[in-house]
Length: 102
Image (cartoon, rainbow, N blue to C red; front, side):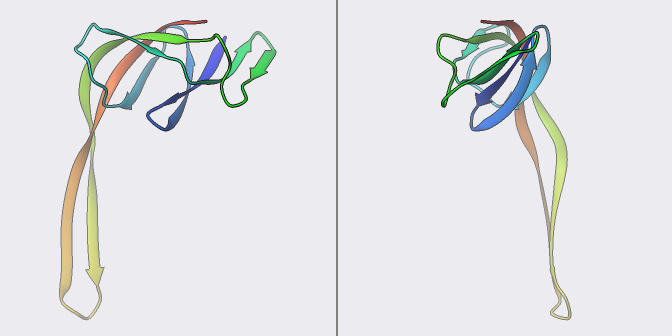
């Protein structure tokens, strides 16, 4: 069984006992979270598509830790003008373990 869930404007395909890296959420490590914006569920071939969400279905999980993603380099340049700018940042993520769908 799997589900498509909307978390902070991004869609994730989740299954039971799976780890996902979602955009940073409030909450300490070990806290439980639930996602009620379930867009689609699949239970052994029976697909239920929401309009816009599936009614009565929630996905629950547990926050494991808060981590940073890989460094992203932003490089801007204008040729023949002597302009070059280098910048970088690391995105903040929350590692979540999916506990149940339903």
